[in-house]
Image 1: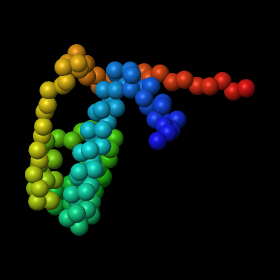
Image 2 (image 1 turned 90 degrees about the vertical axis):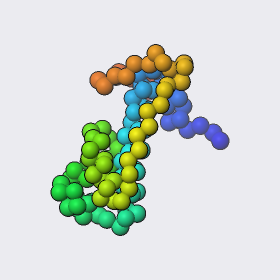
Image 3 (image 1 turned 30 degrees about the vertical axis):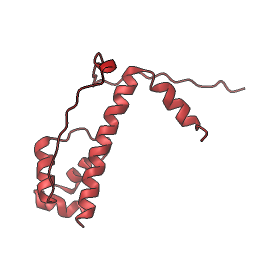
Amino acid sequence: MKKTNFDLYLEEQLKDPTFAERYERAGEAWDVALQITRLREAAGVSQKELAERLDTTQQQISRLESPSYEGHSLSMLRRVAAALHARVRVVIEPLPKASKSAVVRDEPGSYKTTRRKRS
């Protein structure tokens, strides 16, 4: 299968360790958001109904289900899980040997971009 321009661009960006780390973390936030959304939908519950069960707002549930939100607390995840008859499991795994020197940074990184000159 031929790689798209985006695939090639992403492949180049992932060579930057800072970008690669932030990309990985974004994937983790996306995964949490999708799990909450799927669990809520499988239970046949709207965001508003879940918010009422948790004594919070629909906007807070929307934030929890947003892939860009990284403020999930373990206590809130437990409350959501309990309201949806589920459980929370957290897995902390060692990094592969080659990645042990990786540094986690929360501040925005600067990413390389290449733009073609217009003729």
